Length: 418
Image (tube, rainbow, N blue to C red; front, side, top):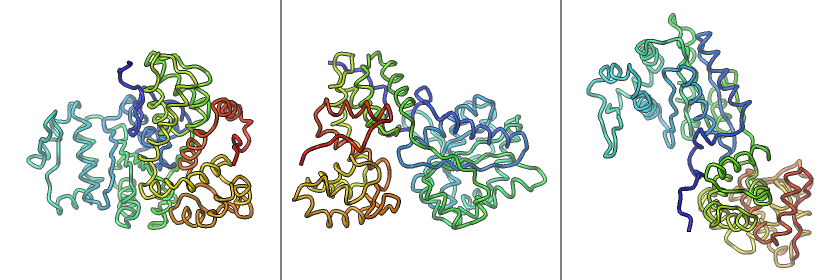
């Protein structure tokens, strides 16, 4: 039985050695940072894309490149449920403290903060700020001044600090954060001593729209870098690299099946790759291994990445069957097309199904799909149900369809009876 660790990392950003594609987006973000360094003018980029598309992995890779290019300060902060400026400021400065532990100026930074820095952690040392609420509020207000002072201590202020603010879901709904971002950048740009800093915000497109709604002036400030799914060649390259590093041979049919069902989503590619890797027992991944792994991955994806209330609702065999048929019609579909594929029992449930799925946010009305048009609320949902649908098909039919997907000649999907 094979027991070595999987080369796939589902649920976490991709390690830099596994990063593939995104050359255009990487270069745009590096250009923003380089221009900020050269002109001493602050810049703000917004990395936008759907869940599971690889936004955090892209940001992490750009940070790696910026550090390699000479930046003294480059930090990637995951803000999670943070909703207020004090909490944001604390997370940012703690991340700066811990990221710079190997820098020669780190000791001076710790000494400047004095007793407000504590060492925590049982297995290795992590630095944590111990400040009361009023001190943290002041740290947020003086963010630009504090960063400017830190940049002087590095001894090389010629490179702009890179501050990546990831997972800004809570902050994007905060007027205080929108105002803070605008005022911090304005102060950095107009002060006598300019502050070259590059902020990279990472989030869903609706978060960007929320910030602009709260402060319309941000529309002119934010440079949008949109992340779209990998193309089939990039997805195939990812699987070849990962299985190759693990010493596993990858047959062409298996590769096509994984490429097709990943839909260009790095998150799905990691879940699928991990499941297939664990199914394979002879170091040669064939179509049967890929098919078995996909069946396992579909369940994992549903549990981990679809909201629990949605996943529980779609466990109804009738609703799941309808969703599978809809997924094979494509990302967008019409009720007329869907009804033609349903059996009598499913057709009777269609009205209630549509109302329930709209209420849960699984599908949305889509005028471009035609009369009675709908689409899946995001591509991740569509790919999940497509994986579920393909699980019902005969393996030969699935492989034929994946060949068509990869070559760009696929129709609405494999046909099924009933």
